Length: 344
Image (tube, rainbow, N blue to C red; front, side):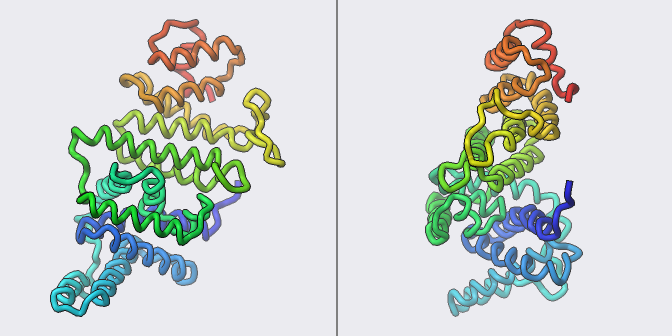
């Protein structure tokens, strides 16, 4: 397996840091739209400077400094009124001061989670939720998102801009939903990630049937959410579903784009590492409570990845998953289902 290029390493680092920096700025200053624009400018500056100059010792601090100064420049140019100037002066960190003190490090995870909930606010339409999540949490540029959905960059820019305004009009604040509301809002977040993955796995437009960039980004964001919410088993179920589904990507179509039915796919092309990870994750989350729809879909997807080839056993095991793992079936099918993570 080839080592990742320096370019892809930079890109992965920037995408990881983008929501962290944005979360800090919004928590400090509010104004989602201005903060998000400032972070995008900081990411662009990093993409231009770091390949030649090298990654700074504290890349997050570097991005936060640049983004903060972009905010200062914006507020200074927006109005010459004294109140604006005073606010800008108060925001600019003194020379030599690290704008990212260690005391804020503990809030990084919560900031990212809060940002994800904000991008999936119920006031937004599903397309707007997808676009804003990919930009603010995924760290993609407007041009990259527009390319992924085969729309003009200007159109996507307007969609993202309207989404920011909708959040502002809804009076949304940079804070986690109340516990009573969080469960329902988490369902929206999972649905958005599910839609991003589906658009990549079965593209609705464009010359290619699959968009690997979107499926990879959906899996990355699902991993992030799993790290932030390890006790939410539906998050694990969604990630397992993505991994098991994506593992068959290379065998799913012919070079001419024709779809290959599952029964006719060359299983040698399946990604065994993804299958093993998905099955292990599935065995962890199933049985911990009443399974949700993503866990059940993952269980059904997993039924095709088990070593036994008896169609009847596969059908029974999948039915057991649908019934919440309470259906009494043949011992072999159910035992293999429960111990599947140890097989691959």
